[in-house]
Length: 440
Length: 163
Image (cartoon, rainbow over all chains, first blue to last red):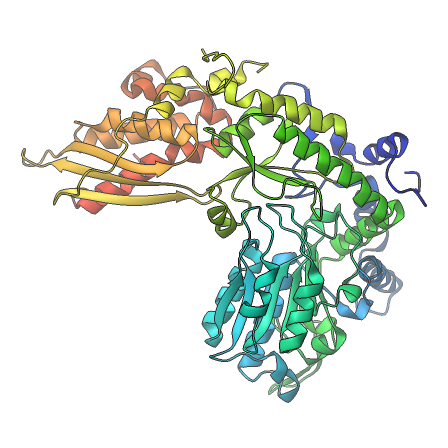
């Protein structure tokens, strides 16, 4: 890989070099067709440096971390904590504010269950600020992935709090103007996505944080879709908590991260309890380690964390401004591709302003599963279904959609293959608007 | 479309049934009817299927009518339509056999079944190619799962074991 510095976007040579870092991208699918991987919103492919980092950990340094006095244990602990520092620095926070979790879903659940425990009095007076009771309100948005909706529904059920939400406009953008009325003095939590995994719309974080601060609510940001594609500085954004996953940002599965402002993490009672997260244990009671270890019970996913650290470094070396600029070009190309095919409706904004290269659409008369099948036959991998966002689909008048999503390694040529395959879909099902050519 | 594998998957029979599905539109519930609602959680597709029995011959109930409402992909919609044609008028024992044979077809990885088994399936043999695509098998089985559950709700059958 060639380091790219002071480059606003990825030129053809840089992009070719990036693609050469991803061994999987060279494989073929379905009878020898070149793979066109447009499902990075679901999970990204992994560069060799990530695979090597994981392998190297096992080959060179494998040992239990944070225990043992032998050299391997020291090296394993160093690798684990260096990875934490790499990921923390990548999103603009301190290592002590970054908790490893198994994925973003568990990161959000960690916050919700810590609040639940605080509501039961755990964590004592310090944690009182995290406690909820009947009459309190939790606010989410209608655009959330189920991972940033269901844990809050459950927290509301357990505590007697009420769940409310910010709606979306017809183009899928959040109704920011409703913050004033929906977020009130009763609101204790405001959980929202940084970028929708369906519409690609990027949330203007500032008014959400400002309104939450006005009323004393905590903010929880789902940053799964933003961190792999945009420069993200969580400290600058000013959110209280944020969750993101390794596997969507070129890292391994099985690892994600929770960012929490240090003072909040310090006040938070533990959720999973047991080994590795304690100070003193007697038969009667236990005192807990400071964060982030307090929230990392049991043996951790060390090699994956090391892989996620390598992924963060890889992206940082490319430069997230260049990544974002490259993907902005892809956004326009994807929107153009979809707009060029008759009978296709985009679920989400049709302009590139504050929008990711993550385009979901409905093909008139053809179910998303069938669209995906025909694209797959051309070697094009897309996501079909509701993308874990049923309420948003319902709001936008669809049960399921087809989603094409990119990553740093995606090319304009691939989007052209996608466009050609998409252009044939309605005709294949006998629905062409031009002279009808029935199938069979 | 290049390789012809799409034509093998989406046989004309399937496209025809998907375009004009049989039995679609729920009929008024009657005393002998059972109803089931099934969802495919990966795509949100759903079906509500109502089955009405003719119990006039003691010990040998038959499927009098099948009606359904729902939305989904062409495979799921066509499969329910074909199911409607296959089981209407059939004795419950035959329905069990058909369901078992269709399930076997879905697990044959596209190789199909023997001639005798395929003869009993009629139009449903068009789904042979679906079994090559593991993600689509659920689509083809959605209606059959609803039928099995609806029959249990009629009280005429208690078993939901695979035939």
